[in-house]
Image (cartoon, rainbow, N blue to C red; front, side, top):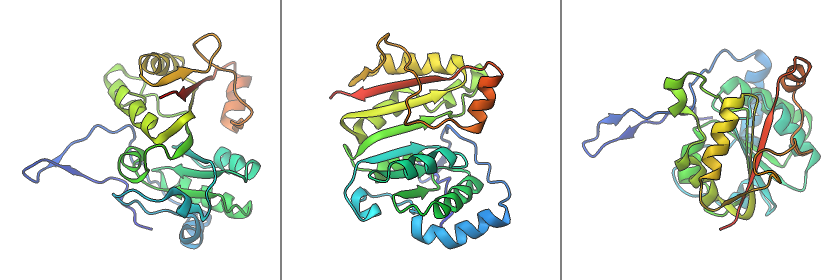
Length: 239
């Protein structure tokens, strides 16, 4: 695989420009099993980044409803969703290579053929690689909340990002977010309520109960036992 998660941007004079990103690259050390999964299964399930639009159906060898998950962590919930919904295609993006390895290993064990993974900046994938109106759902579960006020600008849920997501969703498709940090939930809600082309699927115009489509993770179950909250937001593209 081509490990080019961080790709520079340049000004008109060819000088590299600093870009504020919503993630920090923490590659870490792969376990032996994760490395073996990358070596053996990336050629089957991995998708290399390219700066040109792709045929999404061709990535999977079939035309089916396609779900994009941004930041799948170690891939446990993504693999579960793909295993439970084999009639759908799932594309996962994660910048943490050990997580990619873990996801590939789990996908192989579950004998999945409806899952593809990428190791790249999701914003660049959305901007350059995925065609407009090509996705049936975009999932963003437990992104880094960037707690400190001076880092809030790094939060991925910003007006320009949600407009980019809207363009890639089909009309009527869903943008599903979840967070366990209430201030970030409030931030997400504010951004989405001020975004054009979306309607909130919450009957109270705020948060929705966790849908069955989002599996509970071990981390979330532990948080529930400790009394921690989780907030789900679901918005539909209407134009």
